[in-house]
Length: 210
Image (cartoon, rainbow, N blue to C red; front, side, top):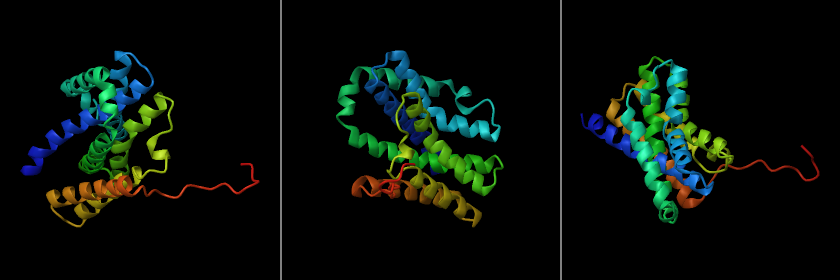
């Protein structure tokens, strides 16, 4: 089917985008090429690795497909030489990252459902797939993880994964359910990027020392 043909190619594009975003963080931290490769791979594969381990799917997906590691490593090395030029185009990279997040949120939820996870767990594992690579990247690089900031990111992944799972439980065919989930996640993230809208942050009352 068309979806089965498109997803692998979009998945590869997502790996490149996530690896490049990780490598750009390595650039800001002044790392060497080995550091670039490590952070790129953590960003690209961290979420899927955590998902597979929680589901008991071993060996994890990238151990069965070493070409994915090679793709992330090549992306990291290329970024090492052109990081300054890529950083000047951060906005397009954010949009590409949003597309990758949307795809992985739904794809992760589908993998979890097929592995026999309960619907609520499948939704959470979709969020894990889409976001935990970035969390691990930021923790390693001593930065505040993106999902702990006010930006709409994990919320968008949750919406996309949740919509996909609900539609599948209602008997909607895979293709329209998949497309609707990806569109919901991407649309919510896009709204945040365009409007600057975010969830409200806690405001500490004046005079209180918590």
